[in-house]
Length: 373
Image 1 (tube, rainbow, N blue to C red):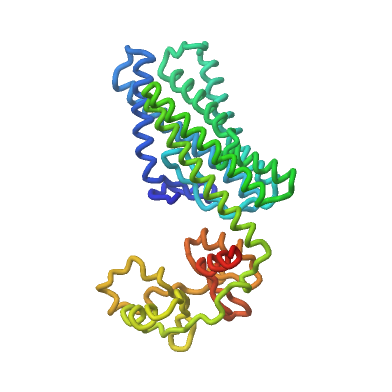
Image 2 (tube, rainbow, N blue to C red):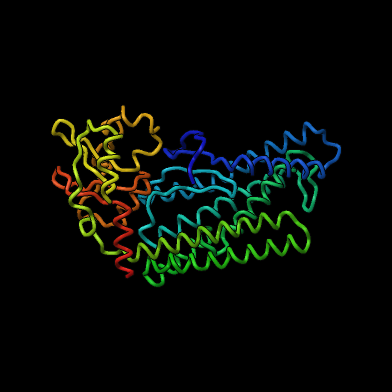
């Protein structure tokens, strides 16, 4: 879930919006406008729509606090958190690596629903102190806003406790299975399998609601179900891959004979005379006898072909430094997490100040294919 608009940083965590957020933001404001209009027809359109916009904004702030709670607990356990992104179906915290213990997985997961429940109960308590008497009784715009925010956050907490991975309830389920069995990847697969079942139930439920009552909300329920089913399936596949790579080190599958090319070679000559005549997709670049870095087919992407004759490998090379490298004894699972975090497809393998080889996602895929065969 990539961030398209960056809003800033909170506790060192980048906060951003996905493009799909604008669609759901407009929809929520529209629905809130209709809700407040029905709550008191005497309120002016200006009051109704200003209240809808403010309530929608506070709702997204509550979503952000939910994800921020996950992130801060993750950081307290030593896990890096890259960003929080709000999108059409809520929010997602991009934690750089998986939990190392069932205990940390449980607390990282459960703090989100606790936060939403606290916000919801706090909003309802504030409304009660200001004179709200359920049911109904939202006599002022402020009370109407507090009551809606209270109920929606309580419902959000309950929804997230559904035991379907990747919902918080699914992660809590995974933590409990992990604690009981001691099997990290096995618990991940089991929780993801339950998540797929929950996703299918949501899809069927939404379709039934739409066909039987013509409710557009049924389509939204089906969309949420499809999202859960897809992400749970990907998580299940990821857990299977991680299990297959247990105990495998970078040195076991890295390429040790990475070809060397001159940094002053133009992209035109590199592609036409070298890249297209080999299956290799990774090359060491040397400039004046010094190692400049790595280059592969990925670095060519986004460069206009008309510029290839005038662009050299030195212009696109990826420098080698400790942060962009791994050691030969690094577990492959850790290297894959690093690739995902840095959004690269290959990593140099450095030992004693020299490059011993290169590890790429392609080599990992070949290893898995061979193992399966």
